[in-house]
Length: 105
Picture: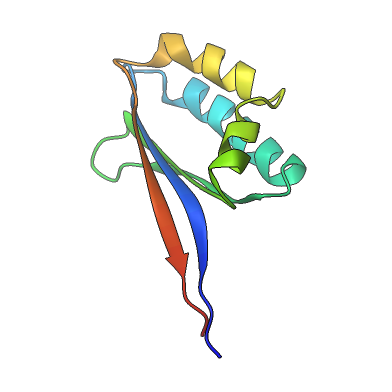
């Protein structure tokens, strides 16, 4: 019998002010590290730098469901990322949500 599992996927794209990449990466990597270590239902948290534009960073996050993502936003490590990254941004981030389907092998 074949079963499938769904996951809640977040793609958040950030356009940074020039010269702020290192500071942003420090905040994003801390959030990713703490999320993976302390949130049971955070399954992946990747920090991606655009190949052709280092001022664009995408966070690829995978959670069990939307509730797990909303829980992530209440964690103590989220606030420093949210507050610390705001002055580094050239505009509002683009955040998109997806239902990822995982098929068994």
